[in-house]
Image (cartoon, rainbow, N blue to C red; front, side):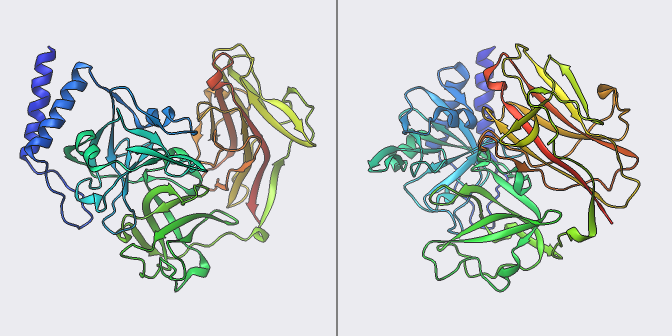
Length: 474
């Protein structure tokens, strides 16, 4: 019965209030518990949600509401729920905090613009909160910066309209803290996994270090006024991959020396002031654990290319038919196609106009004898066009039991590579990075699996593949 659900819901929250939560406070003072008035307001909101008077929307849905042109005022009774992923306890964030959609394995985040400082005293990291969005605004703090933000109002200048901070009175009537504070488990990713979808999410990079030329430098450069950017690097085969760490002039750790070893670093994905660079911001240097030896990139002179396909022999707009490659449609009529543009050959698959509800097609490489040498890497390039968000998928697998014919009876293991997203410029080829094949034995095949649709316009985008290469140590 719905009545019993309501009673259970209220009693469970009252019980939570009566006991202490597991607070993750980064060794700073624990935020004060809610008072009776705040608890009553939260319980009233939860009842409204339960009976359907107020609808809960996800963070991803909130971001989709914003058309990236002008902020808009929410005029419906909707609530977004999230978990605080940032902390201004060290001064590295200012009059803002971020929320993400889950304490573990999050997929999306939002910025909350505040009128007050020291928000960690109330909205501590891990705190579960509900925000009533009606009469608040969704937009950006700087026109075109790409960070979806919840604010209390708007202001305009010659560059456009942005949101303004949530006022103290709005905070008291729109923002509700749950008694729950969850441990925020950082999302383990590599530099290449970062997209704008992860803005506001607490992540962790492993096996990284500061750039070679930063030895003896500090987190903040005193010659700069507001923020300092430092280059993080990770060994990626023959070269380093890089990402930016930004530190505020007002952070309490700004004068600490950068560690010179290698390890893990955790922080919040956000952007610089102008919005043209995605970067990492620390909550605390306790989240920097560099205790390993620095990594070394591979010397290209030690390797030779043992297999390559640049697709320059293709015949434009025909089904791919290259010796040794397997082109197989699992579902639907579409196969990988041979394409040429401006003198460059590649292979492409798109569900556009196929009239198939589902298109799933595989492209499998020739066999690679990984027993013939001790160390092998594979790399390739991938581009896209007409992707809507990340609806289409391209998955990459390897198999050591593919017989050259029966794709669906083989055992396929997924491998992690860098791929373009819907935010990547059309036809811009992204390098996959070097994928280490040395842990496999026998004859190995690499497979590309496309999933899309010819009847759903959100799934009819295209992926292109080019410059497939396998390198082996000489």
